[in-house]
Image 1: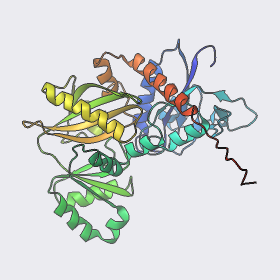
Image 2: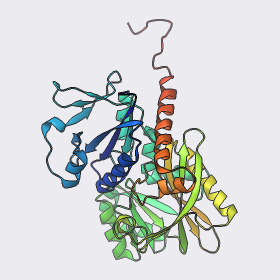
Image 3: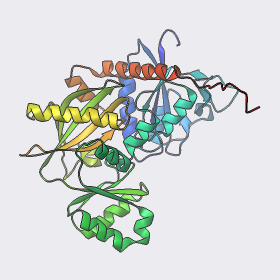
Image 4: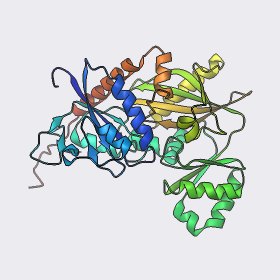
Length: 373
């Protein structure tokens, strides 16, 4: 600790199509962290993957301008250091007590950043390596949900290589498996980046080509008609809790990137107006989904509820949900009685709790005989 304050490294940006969303989320987090408790260390990752840390890091990432060499930092995978280090070895290093990754998508939400933090032995907010990787991969995630008996929409998947080699066969198989309209998604993105809704073969081909720009693995899902988009926030480690529910009414045909962040016309209703038994079923499913992919810390779980019948479908789990001023995750917890700043306190507390438990595990085994010498 420095000056009896926890030094919290907030990591944002990254090599991802969700770079801009991350900047807005991180700005909200850094502004809301209690300055009486925490010393905030901004850590920005450029679109090229360069790590920066200084008082002007956010400004540099938003502008896309080049940084000074003295601002370039690296996080050492050395558990004895636990620090952010200047690229120039002669400069001093900055110790970190805990890290808050506010990174969306690949190279931040997929387990890679979490693996680096595990190697560095630094506590961090959110799911571990496995939970993060599963939380981003929509294919493996759905397979585990099905295994857990959770209700999911009909889906299929394929690789872009298979599509390129067997284009006609792939299209025919997709159409045989799911009627139009259908959703085409990259398997490993969030924020609706690269997602389209196809109503015919021409739109299907265009959707596959777009999704293929963001991932090698493509998911096709049947569109459920007359649905309400319901979201639930989950918080905790081994004993997670579910928030009240929220409903999103998108401004576009579906909740795409523009509807989420750009046009500002989508409507959010908290709490969602659902029958009590449906609400409790959704909240129960949210916790089961959280546990099915070995989450910890936080996650936002998204559902479809069919109008009229109230049939429930689990859509996906987001292990690093948005933290912007309009993001559902903090809004849901605020409506559940946990204000934004206290939510951040709790997430940091959960990160340290999980880290301490992991550090109790033995990392050395002593056999009876030194057979390896």
